[in-house]
Length: 495
Ligand code: NAI
Ligand code: MG
Image (cartoon, rainbow, N blue to C red; front, side, top):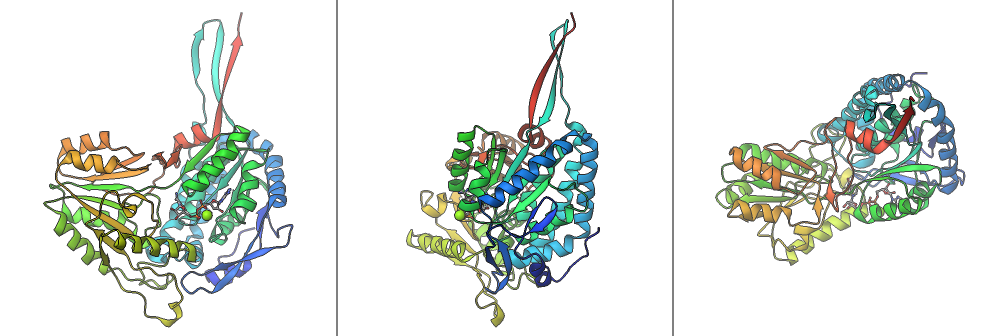
């Protein structure tokens, strides 16, 4: 049955309150417990989330396991067509989903949340089209033996997702996993359980019951049991380095494969010959100021050639100052709020640390004046200059609207500064010189390197980092084949 559009996110939040989605149906948690979901722009409760635990994990994994066999036996293109159909239906719900994610996450509707909803839909259409690529090879092993490989589903996949782009980061796990013939159990992030639950509910219109299940709950009590469950054969995780390590350890006990996407401290090198207009626009987009900097790829280390440094800083400040903070659901708003009190305190703490470390603080934009938003978790964007490359603000992931700008003299110095990081997710270089661009792309230690642009995750561009940024790739054909299937070698003796 088609699901009606509910464009008022407060109404929709209440309708979805208190549920998981298991085996095609919204169900309450076994223990009957729920926790509040807040609007971070007002501090008000907008609904409840099911407080799932190991009992719910067991029910969801059993449903997934039961459904997976038939699902994997369907022709690949049939699965692909169903996933593409999900994408089309999700697109018709994009406005509704954008509003709901704006309400629960504090991300502005126009600049972020609506965009996320349409990328989500596009990911399902894209992966649906890849079904025919689940193919193997023939191997010239022995003329008397036909030797070939096939791609097989791994079984039940556990996916643990964060709150910053919850729907899209869920899609880049769920879509390839399902197309490849797996069933999935997602554990949503505590702060954003509702929009992803709605996505799963909408997809039930098309999918067989049990292939896509979603649980809400806390990390240790719900995410932990999901990773540890004996029938979960692969885990895909996006979140913090610390939790990534915990997930990796638990998966190691079971010897199952893991994909980890863990964040970064991404450099943006602006050479003296760069087009400054483009670099400023790229810095604003790359730093995700409109998402309060809550991005794993945030271009939070801006390395600018000394000849452009002062002009770059001045124009960046002017531009960020024009961004309007306000109610995430207001079309005028560019910048919404930080996700929760804990992250708010963390970000504010780093801003204090930066000042104590002696960097120059430029605090920008203006807090909203609307009294309805007085309890909102708004943080004014900060651009630090005169930053010591060994300062904590220069090295640690802040995950807030805080950028550090550094000055360099030589290209070599810029590359060394850029690579001197525990992380290796993304990097950009801004130059009009071909040789500089080529050398930089070769030498920058990161999984995702761009020249003269700062695009976000795109369908079919393998996305994922090195060093503490994680393991494995997402969003591409490679991610589906390498991370959601295993390769089987088959030899037929013809003698
Ligand atoms: P987190 O890593 O604790 O949470 C991410 C997900 O993991 C959530 O669904 C959470 O419930 C789950 N989780 C937590 N503990 C778990 C456990 N023991 N077993 C299984 N699942 C568990 O991240 P958090 O606390 O929300 O944010 C802290 C920091 O993490 C941020 O300041 C940021 O630096 C980083 N982060 C990075 C993200 C990225 O896109 N790579 C996204 C979100 C946060
Ligand atoms: Mg945590």
